[in-house]
Length: 363
Image (cartoon, rainbow, N blue to C red):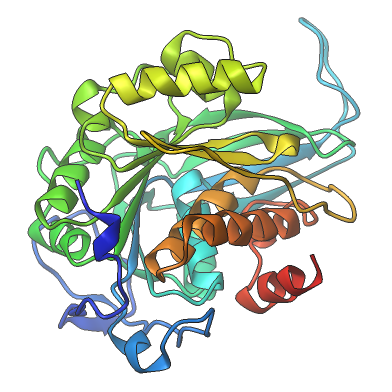
């Protein structure tokens, strides 16, 4: 596993040599031309400007979905049909959400993932690029549609989601290509989720570990046990309360219960667990140390909680790779999540760096 003592913007990063084509590569996992997009300059969050040019990137390996939003007053009962007030399709997916969050926070961010050769795939590629994400490792596959999700959004901002995996869960090669693994090995930090196959996450985590690159695994996605092999390769596990309960088969209704469940994660080989508690904030548990608690930074109005957890995890990762203390990372992530819930949609709600810093100055 990577060591967070090595996280420094001074780590040299070599950008791929072939950044020339304006097309998303077809599903051919041998080396090929890539999309051209230079990362935006990194704004200062107490980062030495002389080192930002060499900052190792955030690399997100994960899912990209077209989120089909329907606004409803309540969930339908069994056998019942209800009418939605409105409906629209927006780009999302946990991986794409986290990548755009990194891009909007003006940190060099690569996304490694798959989309289908369809309109939804085009929508996602455009949203990633407009969000400042380098999409050289975004693959277009012909054997599956772009993943999509139906998001049932209620008036109080809470949601229920049904996911169709599509290209996120199929058509991956048995072994990732050298170019994809190389970008992982040269990362400053790697973000994974559970909306792509476990064997892909394991390959990525092994590559990162071999290069001493820290790995954060967001536990959201597939409702299935996390392979022990994967747990032993990650540095931080980031579940919410319900995900932590499913992972450990333990209750998580109180702080004491959450602490006991995290203890089980430590026994599984995970030394750091970042638990997202919704309206109750978040807690970072590090084995052998006192937990660090972070309350929420209240939002003026909660419009949509979709993507809030992804925003929190990605913002935490950005602050961490920039060399912030754990307490500062939690605060930065809480501010980003507070801004996220005030806008409808996942990717559209990702805040920019200036807005996050401005909010932090007021709390």
